[in-house]
Image 1 (cartoon, helix red, strand yellow):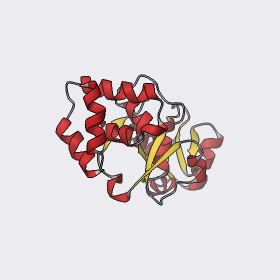
Image 2 (cartoon, helix red, strand yellow):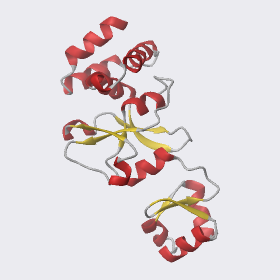
Image 3 (cartoon, one colour):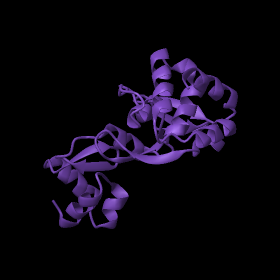
Length: 194
């Protein structure tokens, strides 16, 4: 494998075509490296070393800058629920879409554009890669907001596990809830647990 490509993979898990071209690796060279087994194509225009285990969450997040992991997936990433969902949950701004190939592989939630960036943070995927995800407080707001789409066990354990966190940030939680118009529902959800 090319030295510049090896250097890139010391700091990044994937490479896309534009990035490869900036370090002197052509699209044809990427295809050749896939053919000889040095690289694997993980999505259109995105590659990673063939020896790496494919991180589905990383691949999904690299496909669109609008994708933020949320709901059941965020609960698992923050260890607020012990079940890793088979289908990852993502949130997009209302009216926005992602490529069909991704849309069929995820559970999509939509939120008003004004709320989309509220509480975005970076966290570590189950395979150790950095991915965009909502913080714990925003995740709890999403769980309360989308209660009808969740099973009761997931809902109750998420609220209960959050309430037991020593590092929970209740002022932030209620600030998010107020911005999202969920104050009354949030108080009701937490009254049962606290």
